[in-house]
Image (cartoon, rainbow, N blue to C red):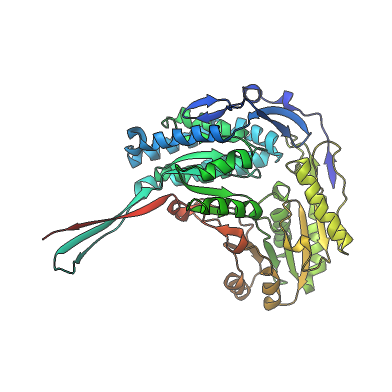
Length: 502
């Protein structure tokens, strides 16, 4: 495995990126830039170098309250509540076009802020977000209730129908791993449904969310429809969850934090959607196309340095091809080039922070101490927060590396005998987010689809998200859905209307 070190810094960024980084830290509240009431700031660190490249506003409860009040005012204003479905559709398409026009700037900001390689930021994160927005833009004109006629107990004719109405002001709390795309996963269905939203991005990666706030206003959305408040979970996220004017909370993040979010919302009888962690299995049968399967398994864990909720962090390989597949995946891992996310040669960027690097390294070291074997060159750049792609073999089923979400470029591999054996192992964690199966047998595929306890199964496919299909899990991976018509359901409630005649 190679490492690539090149003198790349924020000073090489395009002018518009530098200007944005140098702008005064502020939230986007009610259509204006507003500094934190406390005047405090949070440093923005480039994970490729460890350097401070900018600052964001450190939001607290007073800033959250201002944002929620702005969202509530927008919800009650005729400019938004009386906007026709075609108007909402038009505005959303305009926003998608603005994302396209600014894709180079957004991708550069995302790569600097998050550490994902620039092509990944461009093609998956930003372009993918625009695609989701366009898909959701088709829904405002298709939201409909149903009508029925029946007879009352007193013999009168009754006409009943249902109306699908926005739930109100919603709070969106998103993680740092694919920031812009996940922001759109919350914002787009909210806009399609006619809700207003207060979005709190992760404090580690807030830049593109703030840029989105500017684009929303440029697109022509009324002030207060979309508000962005930056800050930490306890200082900004918690007040957002607990605010009495917030009707529902949509959270994506770790299961540990999701439990806290669920408890806080429950204390206020507030519905919540939780898209949480995963420990997703990749299953390779002996009859699979092993070239495609090995490539898919490697991509499933090393993409974005393993910082993907659905990352295939456990690999189960049928015994007769186990050694062959492990060697193939190890060879692919060795070809990755670690380096600055802005370097065109880089294929594997850093993890998000020093704290997270230490966490991932801790899992690797614990597995080795527990008797597992590691396949990795462990060659990493001197600067930044890098973890080399690592393959772990021989780990125990009950080991932390098997049971817990590592969220890094770390793949644990296990042999299996048959369908029953692999289903028991694959389902043997608390998570149930996603799974991938590689086989040429329809019988194997159907058995896995039927037996795997998760929200999504991909067969002979890396399982990228598609706007029209829902994403979400079961068990400790949460409840609620992003994407597809199912996601829109979370932003609407049904009102029953009855007309009775004599």
